Image 1: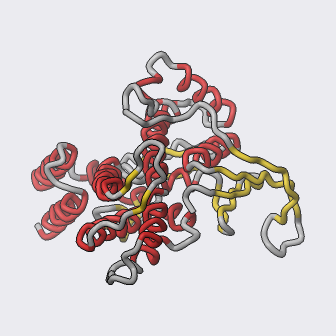
Image 2: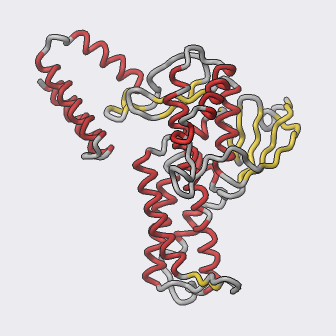
Image 3: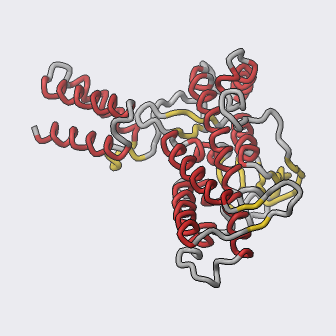
Length: 335
């Protein structure tokens, strides 16, 4: 599952559990877990850990004894684990990595009776739920570090090619302020963007796609940590000319495979999913030019700015922001 990740790198592609992606796509998927979304997942897991560890007898020199919690506590814990798993599965990469369908495992404990609540089942449940901790930690370790690298280094490059990507990564790691930009125990207790990763790697002849008859020497990796997998994906992607950028319209990350300095992504725009962010940005620029002296449009722009400031101050959440932006646009059209 999350502590046993096997994958192939073939040219500019990465194959994970039988599914192929462009190098960089899994990293982009993980980086699109927003800080607020991660904070909610992290807090829920800490609450879950409190129940889990409260029921474990792990005194020194004594074998760990798995004592099942009360039905009420186990039910609360199970609800939290289902919510955590569901939140992670909103992002493609965690759907792919979960080879054991964890959510169905947790749902099997929704209606508990005396036959289920025993030490053997609790031990299995505890060990399964514990697999989420290093993964959740690594989401923070990777995302915090790469947010800075993408926003403060990659986005300022004049020439977008593998040589400059490598130089930017060197500058990032050797920057005097690197300790503030990378996840580390000094700034974030128990967290660390590691400088070295333990992994197994073999060179294996493999078909480019199943049944095509064309072969390449693929790099086969076996890792135990999520950040090890993501670093191979992200950094190999840079060497293949793939780089991640942040959309200036919606704030989400997107993958570029060519050296264009595109500012907007082709994902559905949050305020109007019928259009992409790229299309919405073009419309905004065009409308702005055409309505430079229109008082109704100026009022609309002030409304948008107020909504965005409220969102940045966390007065409103993402859903409320989208609703308000859509209402503002509809009111302007009706006028």
